[in-house]
Length: 395
Ligand SMILES: *Cc1c(COP(=O)(O)O)cnc(C)c1O
Image: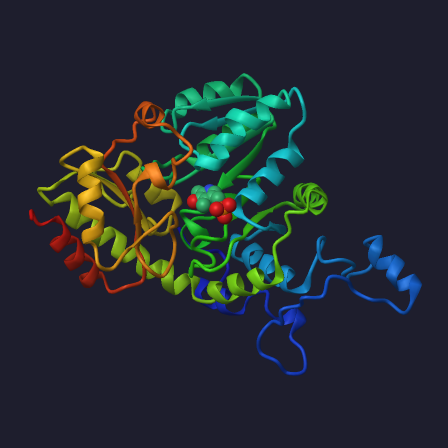
């Protein structure tokens, strides 16, 4: 797949969205900490408040620094509009609660991000929203559930932590026949590797905390799509108050300037590491969409420009004890509940993506006890492979 725009993504990451609030020759976007914006002319104030004139009123609603961050993501996703929230979960919950009403129905998958899964299993049912969670790779079942009628189809690809791949174009086409809104969590792929809107989705959203920011020092979330949908989500988010902080927006913006560089390195390293691990005697299985052994490889090749920085693997000794012994041996990896950072980050689902689940629930979801999620950083590939090699050596 090629990007339609003739300006390439690396250039887009650096320049897009930046120009609007540069002041006095400054080359960087200011961090506007002001809570409110003053108007000597009451008519002008009124025009801005009514949305008839561009400007800002109060930073829970809109803020210049936050706006520049939203613009950069919007342009990278090729969207008409974007809005943000304080975290990935802030934007996911705002999106779902803005679009759904009692009596509505959602079709989604069992492998959504843990927090999203809690919204589906615990919160939405309390508001009489019916949720059907399908087997993530069973496209026939998902299509059949969509055909029964639904209001929202919520997808994630690749998934966390077993990197399952969903055919976004196929499911978006199915959703269109019942006029459902298609939402795709694009956190793992990033706009560098995948643009769900070009595949027919209505909304693409991110935990900006991960790859977009890339430095594990700021939380944030963002959603992109048609203006009418984004306006609805923005309206809910301005009232629920989960606003992105301008300082976080600045850190995310700065991180995004190197997004293409980082993701390109992470794509390359993750593929090499996946191939290395797949051939290793101490490894039972490697989950990575770039491997020809991966069930979703052909779909991934069609809809992604790179296979992403996250892989997971299962140790041959399938016990949590084996994980307990292996993880501390890695030198170039944080053992933490995060991903998409410049540093390599590793962790088992039990303490990261599926911390909300019991061991029995994890087993039912097909998540083995010895599974390890490996989020490739931007270190040199050879050093990461050497590090894995020494850690996997029998002691
Ligand atoms: C981390 C993550 C989220 C939640 O984002 P937060 O910023 O932690 O709220 C949502 N989806 C995916 C795929 C994630 O990895």
